[in-house]
Image (tube, rainbow, N blue to C red; front, side, top):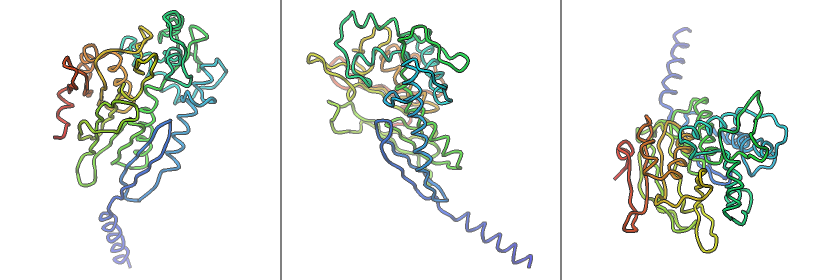
Length: 330
């Protein structure tokens, strides 16, 4: 009897060893954009319900377009209990602000809204208006104290849009890891987090978009890279813009001036240890431009970048850091 029992155990073990991981793809709309999540699972499980709940939790905490979210209530100076998602986004945003010397500032919301890049349709921009709003933009003048957000001025407002989707990709990645998934690619509106590679040993292949002529132009791949165990985010100005009096203005606004940037960089793709920091650093690079941001990128361990810009001949040019260049596929 004992021999039969041991034989059954061995057969079960061999069967489990031979089980092939199944490819699961979850796709949909969330946070005003798309999401595409691919993972391999020997148990062929769908985590759609759990992932939907993650999107909902993030929306209810830091989504400016959700009127009842925590961030919306804080911006209206209503009493609200902050949660771990809000605290994480606040702390990461403040770290990014310090790292960039204020080129990233989570209190830029009033100016972003005035330009029409937020839940408002925009105001009539004048130097006087920008000057009146700039005094509300200073990350050093807001903090969390005893579980509450303390503002230096009542009209200060927060905006975590530059990191919230990257943060969401990381949350989903952590959830998948908690369920024993070792191979996945999470893409939340272009904010990507990859873990492992495909079961055949190949890395994930990710395309980087060529800067577009207009917001609705066809998407064309500029280059492709091999990705493992990293976050990857592209920030660009060619699809997100407003037009005023026949002139286009980028959504990348310099907190120091209150105006959209006008340098020659069209997009920056950043590779980092996770998606939220790739998100933050890509935004920082787009505001600072290549000349100012490249020394910062090169000073950080595990961070690489790929710039697409317009050169002196009005042609597209590219620059990749050494570590990024090594991942580019011919």
